[in-house]
Image (cartoon, rainbow, N blue to C red):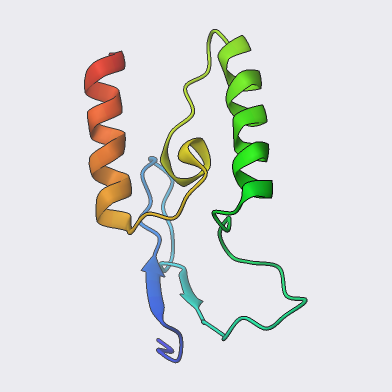
Length: 93
């Protein structure tokens, strides 16, 4: 297994299908430079306005629940994403 990234993700099969060996993915960080696409939304006036538009559209969807980083349009550490998802499920289900 290569470990030259900032994170390692091992996929674990969740179906009855047999997998010969697990898949691994490494995320490699790089310093952001002007002109690069930001990894996560920047909380500025432009993006906050865009998020408000997304919220309005999301309210029109009756059978969809938006959550996590996409649903809140902000960066969360994974422990907080998981906690928020569990909280949301507890309220919605």
